Image (cartoon, rainbow, N blue to C red; front, side, top):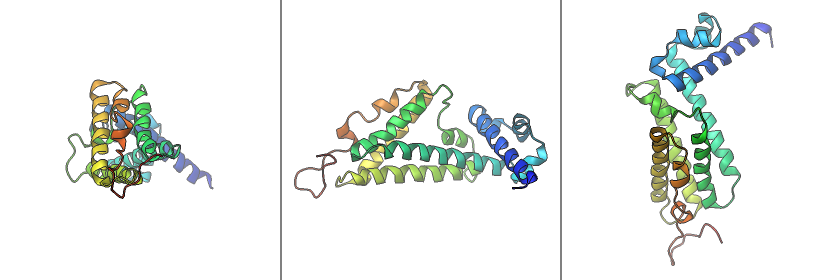
Length: 200
């Protein structure tokens, strides 16, 4: 790798790190590119070399947030084998996130506050929400319940409620109380149905 290319990549990484910190803690609409450049310690031309403008930077910031969160959830789920435990793993990861001192709420909720319906923030939020729904539907289906979509919808509501409560009340406990029992997380199919109990 040539030194100019290496420097450009380093500058882009520094810009993304600065944007992540500023956008998340102060708000996308409150932070301009000049602040990002200053925090990153790069020339303004470096930003426009790596990104077409602020919208492009915001898009990458949110894509990075999405990817990092998806990886974190996947790692938590992978540690469990029982279908019910795999569902509860999502809320365990949420609890760890909520307990972090720098937690400022959901990056996508924050990003879409005041954003236009056709904005890059709104588009990123649609993608993120689709992932949340697919995640829980997949986990619900693994349990063998006869109505996995209904269970998935309930789990999404519990997830959203935990996120909103943690953000508004500034406490880490909602993730632990969102799924109140293993039965709620994945009820055993009634007798006579084709569903298979999640645990033996």
